[in-house]
Image (cartoon, rainbow over all chains, first blue to last red):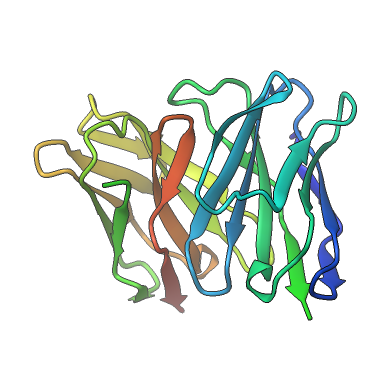
Length: 115
Length: 110
């Protein structure tokens, strides 16, 4: 069964450094998402992306964050200047369509640790 | 209100028992309600989902009950097994994104 893959599985970065999290969505999917999960808390929506532009973003997704689809297969999340509170699991998801009842498939996440 | 409230936070059930997890919402614009199962170190995996024009959906041992007037929905796991031990999240879809509940950590004792 096709799956969403994320790399790296764990990223340790010094505060203030830039970090790029990478995702390969399922190949025929058109909609891409990033979510994050702070340890012990719920999964929170960050951003959705379709047709090479952001469809929707949350309050969390401020100017420090950016997303890009640099080629036909990768989808990246960049955090420009990391803060301690950015430490979390970051999940990429994709779906075939965005209308309701089209499931979002999640990757296994990247654990981001900011020191 | 774009929140989904989930309870209980944790649940211990004996093997063979019924696990019940409840969720409630306020926003009537929510129009798709999936449940996700998450094992440690893994991403959320879609378990079962329901639309608000349906009151119940069953897939194997998993059933969603949906009460539109009360704005509540619940997951029932029949004949719970130790392999069902995981964290379960309810979610609601609105405006192109999923809003998740806080999660329920289910432990099924042999």
